[in-house]
Amino acid sequence: MGTQKLSPQALKAKRSRDLESANSPDRKAKRAENQRRRRAAVNKHGENWLIDKDYDHSKEQFTSVKNNRGEYGKGTK
Image (cartoon, rainbow, N blue to C red; front, side):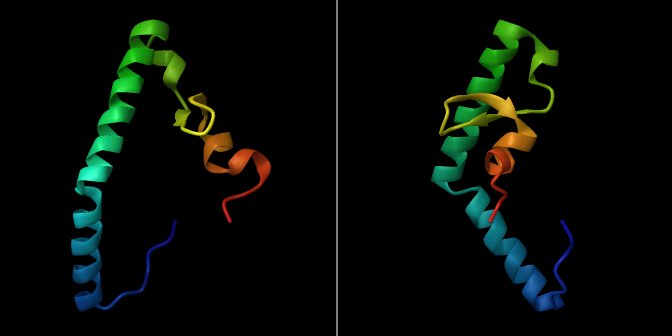
């Protein structure tokens, strides 16, 4: 993903907004849930099993990063 061409003032504001969003209670809860699921999967299957996998919340299982982030061939838009 390329970088945005922002003025220094806009870049500072964006970083502040992004940090606030990333540390919101909702995002913290989602991050903690993902960590719990990945740790459980490591204990069950081993570390190498998780390579190139993301948790798909709609299917409630681990799938490949390519499929999960690409909407299973539909693209991201």
